[in-house]
Image (cartoon, rainbow, N blue to C red; front, side, top):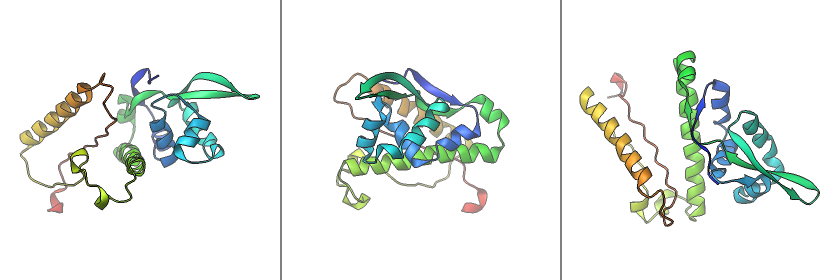
Amino acid sequence: MKPNREVFWIDDEETFELLTDQTRIAIIEMLGEARSVTALAEAMGVPRTRLYHHVKLLEEAGLIEVVDTRKAGALTEKIYLAAASSYRPSEKFLANARPSQQRDAILGAIFGSTQVDFARALKEQGIEGLEEHSDHKRMTLGRMVFELTPDRLQDLVSELEALLERYAKMCEDDPAAIPVAAVTLVYPRAQNSR
């Protein structure tokens, strides 16, 4: 079972703040497939009791949903699923939030989830540090600073978006496909950073 919605549009800063906590980010990422709190705890290697508060907050905000229940002994256990495949700022949020709120909320959520997911991926592969990663064709990490005209910058942004979209759709139904994450941030630097 996969999330029903492609995008969850976030309207307020409080919801974005929920996405700055590494445990909550990990929970949402793990709920790309339906799981109980017990299954989440096992997959994350933490006690169940550590997750209940976070799960409750995410459920109350609508970021995760109960999709089923089942009996677990004398208790009824909820099965959760992420509310959507991705979480993005809504037009309402962008129209009403101060620019600093927009920046901090969006970047906090993106970089927080990336950090959690990247660390989990390295751990799953038995990699302690990046220097031990021998298969460079499966991962790239770096920062590049260069100069472009405004028109070329727009071309770069458009081409990157199109490239990522094309690759995202390329292997949708292939059982050999593995999950891949891509984070891009292209922006005109401050003039005094040269």
